[in-house]
Length: 433
Image (cartoon, rainbow, N blue to C red; front, top):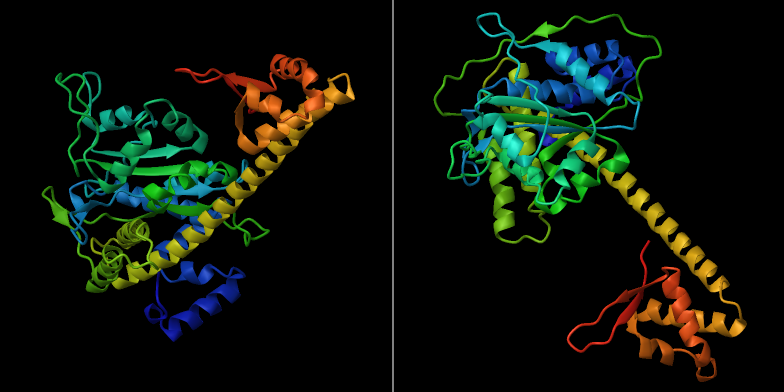
């Protein structure tokens, strides 16, 4: 995260003046660079969220850079610049519209005058992801792909299939590691060499559906994404005038292995974090290493928007501000997922209690109802129990009703029979619904 030393008093005062003039407390961020202010104005003119549009522009900037351009071996080995983002917003809040504006806001022409734009194929399985870059008999291999997933449910459904490898392949793709699998036949082999492809990914997600990311936090999955909001609470009431796209000429890198220049201060920040991880500092989260790596990738994309090939300290500072925004947006998703699960658990508990009341209500006598409550109480305490122990849980004078009550519970599906094995008695548990 940027430290106070990164920003001069003059810059802070200037940002405050800009923000006051614009009526948007974030405007100081946009006003500090012409490229950022253009995205801001363009997004406003298209009535979309400015940070979400910027996320798309940043992905496009990286996707237009050849895969031989990498981050130097600050920690371990070289790392790909492949950039992932997610836009968070409810249905109808304009996630797709922000992407559309991001694709229109900036043009990246080549020296020959041809727009530089990575292909945008549909996302598929983990094997299909590798196949994009491996190619097949009917399809030439790609060197770059910019995947856009309009709804996280699509990604979750594919990744949730039995034996699916998509989530794992995406984790590798973020780092630029080798993809796919080596088979005996060249027709079925999908192995793709490390740093031979450029992969950028944009995923749109409703807050409550973000568990796909958040449940993989131990793998560093959510930290590999720059999170942006699909809303703009300070959008003007009157529609701004149309804004034309701008052209940004991409720097040239050549076709051989190229490690970008990273300021010594950035090396020191990342190295210090890694040292704390190695020495098991209890106050250091190892997964923040992915967050710092995402910050460096964003810094590079910001440099490209300035038509520069190398990262400087100001890129690192501005990227830190975007990471702060990203962390706040991710926290909104965490709160939404937690609230949804709490409501689901409350509803499940209510439904379970109602079901118990209905089943016990079917028992014809008070004695049977008392036996039913004893059986339920026993299973609530121990979760699973055999017939003899359930019978002993009932008062001795009520046990003549035990068999009929147990049969009622089984017939209604309230209890599930778990067959014993190797001499063990059958057991029963309350059916989960």
